Length: 517
Image (cartoon, rainbow, N blue to C red; front, side, top):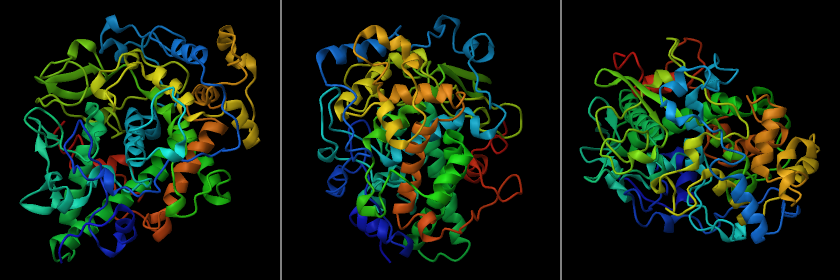
């Protein structure tokens, strides 16, 4: 049996029957199949959850200037981290380290921040809209397949994207060495050979991508030991095994950490009320999710992290997420992607709870964004354009998509509506933003006031939960649709049968114990 290449929609329909490839992404910044974007289905456009609600504001120069001011460095949203104290102090000094109250829980750990980013890269990629310029979602292609199907990992499969795969064994991915531990395959200039260039944006997301590559490769060995007879069969079975365990983690660990277990259960049991996609053809990604609510994850990012315990000449490697002085360095002092060096790997005990006391919490959900995110390197921006302040980009996107205000959406959901007093800091702009608040800002404040900074509130949580669960329910090849009573089949470290990220990383062979850390 040969590997076959089909359109992404057709291949997903045939996925469980053993066909081998899905559509991927070709884009600047990483090496992938150049024709992959052309293989995206013509109907794959962004959508709206609330098409009958008006925009929160007109796209006037005055409004654009106000949004840019709210999101500027040193502005209302800047957490004003003391970067001069250095990346280590911002983690170990309690006076400088804003912790999550749920720090002891695995779901509240630093790693969930980056799993949220990984999920986003799996389902959405806007490559055409312009910041602040009103754009119809229906005219904007989504360069990702709107399903949690790992097309951001698998690309278009071994035939169409051969550079992603091991030439000695076409059922497996290429995985290279960064010195001490695994790295993404790279070109001589450091460019990662990946299906989605964003998965080399920072060291942690690159580490997750490498862990998925290794998980799949070990899954190939697993299914071969159980009778898979040729490469195509081994690839298809291993992909299903990898994808379903990933979907299980999203539904049972990552999503509950964002919106709460009760909210997840309510959507699963009582159904979706706003995201109406019932099949693959209707499963677009709403701009209320893509442009606002799911961007809550940016507030979870800390200014710095401990990447590993012993990678820097036997001591821990700490770094800011992004540091301007690292620009052009072959071994950057920060955690940006795009480089290979012995210390540039992730020690996962910092990010997920291996019960060794080393795990660190994620930041709270609030309107205070870590200072390094106000000065992104252009390489971390998909289109390589200014502004480099991530909050400015998020706020201007509300004008791009002409998003309704958080208050109007709360009313439409029959959810509690925050009062103008809750946004008094916005009143000084004289544009009514305290009454018609950009949805992203509203979702962050709602989480802070109602969710205690731990989980999203009723508006943000409902949007995020319904879209992610809806995408799983609309995809006939997801475990939730194809085999709703399926349970993970791979071993767990706890022995309880509850497969978690620590089990995923252990099966991938990247756990601290397996590395001798």
